[in-house]
Image (cartoon, rainbow, N blue to C red; front, side, top):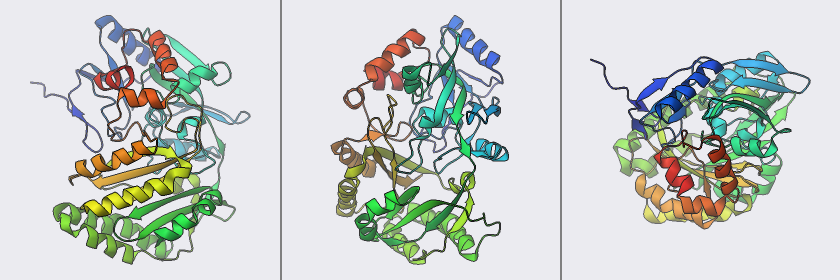
Length: 435
């Protein structure tokens, strides 16, 4: 007797039983899968690492994983590009590029995602001069619903590239991605606590004078932990300092223990926030390492997350309203609010479309009540013209998408051209993008 195959997302917000799961290991295998689905009248969704909170990949039909289709296929050091198979994780890619003396120009703080999934959902890092990861895509190999293999690049198909860069898998199966890359570089990181009022007062200086800047506000403490990162010619430090070791222990062991306590005893949230902040240093000599090792943070604790993009200049006002709402409602929580910056782009469905953006992420530990907290924060994002990160929890509906994304009709026309039978849609995507 065959047991049902249950698929779960990383945070277990999405759990379902696909009709079939396929792991093609070649471009030909991807094409054969699509043609077989077309003959059988089946739909297809493609899954990466499952690091999204929304039901983007839910399907009763065929779930395709490209975890057997990984690696770098070609590097062109004259054009400074790398062509990468779509199932390659960001962690694998960073190490492989480093061996060639290359790097991605920016990354987010998690490297477990598959490359195609990260780009297709608009995943980003931070840096006011840097776009989302999708802006690094300069070419793509796309398999359409007819099994046709299309080769697009930003010179020959500029509009199509701005559609596919953030497309949530609705246009076809992205098989290969050509990325713009840069020579390897080192970064110096400084991270320590500061009063939130000081960070906000110096916000423009912080975001302009650092290649990357972000901060984590801890509720009920009046403090945040900023992270300032600059390029440097200093050598990477092979041996970690005692302060780095302590910070890692604090971040992983102590934080995990505190989160577990706050989940079991929610009334402790305020006290644990203040204890944690008291343990964090108020100065830091910093450390230096190669970029691909600096960006990611190990996540041993699972959590729920909602993140919205707003116009960059509105962050102070938006955050002030969030803080007021948290303090008035006395939400029982021990998890920071993360603030980052992304340069605007021309990608049709990008949350940073045609505006420099600040991203604010609210989070809560897995197993802790988060629904009321997120429900009361989300209207604040809407008030500030917010657009959600497509992979994170949100209640965005078709009318919101239509109002926020003027190129939606163009995107949907291209989708209709490439997949008229709606092969690459599911119920959630139909509701959200078709109404």
